[in-house]
Length: 517
Image (cartoon, rainbow, N blue to C red; front, top):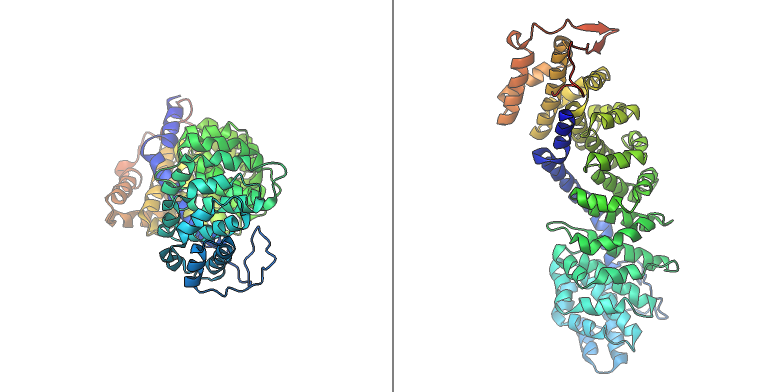
């Protein structure tokens, strides 16, 4: 029982968990960067065609912009709403069509307060729509440009437009609010605190158009997004039941943004993870690990990976839902990012108890994981190293023996010359755990020879001159305890072997649950 508590402590408390969560935050930023350019294009509504696509299909869609920016401003200030409309339309076209729209110039001219004013013209939906679209594009720019929209009081007026009888107006308001919420924690919280989320959820109905549904789910995901701080969980929690249903959408865009929202909501303490699990969505989320769409698979895998950073019980729910059936295939995926995420997810499962480690073994995951450790790109190798070392920390003697038999030592030793000292430290910890287990079983000499034969001893010896003190201490500890006559225990049982395989023979006394390495 004490051993199980130690394992749980490794996974869920103290420095080790902080390290695992820091790794997750770093990956999250990296993942979002890869998607950033596509999102910017989507938000700005840029098109290479003469006229950008929009929920509103105009009758004069091919009309070119003939107004200068100054004429646009004068037109928007005109008291005649027909002139206002033509000027606002021209303003929107300039902000939509060009690759580098003159957002700052239009802000300096003063179009933002006029567009915000036009949002309130309920008797003139076409003018409302064009003003809303123009603001959407301005809010898609830099944080300063988004702030220019917010500071003019646009959010409450955009919120009112969510209830517009015109679907095109409501959808453009969703888009604008999504851009504002996606700018960062401050604007996200401003939108949340206005009570926009319930209004967005009300737009999701069986007869909602696909275009509106896609934009609404995307906006909701932005309300769940960003950290430092994370959103008030009580404000975003009402979305969970709807998100659970949206996982069953036939549309991959809806599925993808739903999974992104869930990946943000599961990135945190166990209480948040539990609230997500309580909706019963874990089986469907795991099913999406089989998606052929990488846009869906990537966030689904991230959400599953986040869940297994939780308690052993929460991890068990993911295992029971069949997640391990997909991990072997994901470790062989053609996309390097998927391989890295899969290895990271496995590392969080092997940080659990020996029963969970056994299920990883039974699912045939360790062979492809060791292949990643041997031949993968460095980021994937790093996650695989964590998975193996976590395994050596929580596994039983028999499980560690199996790991050695599967050939884990060579790829581990290969990483000892890595320039990333954190990875070197992880590998040294894993080798120490294996050698400790072998020592208790009287097999340390055989394992030490295996490490030496694959170049591990040379690598460990060279680390005694490493600049990092922790690396030096770990390397010195291995040399002194396992590779010198003084470190060998003469009282240990005689080593045994069968067909060249390591056999960790049982000692006279084995504590329940295996040894504490």
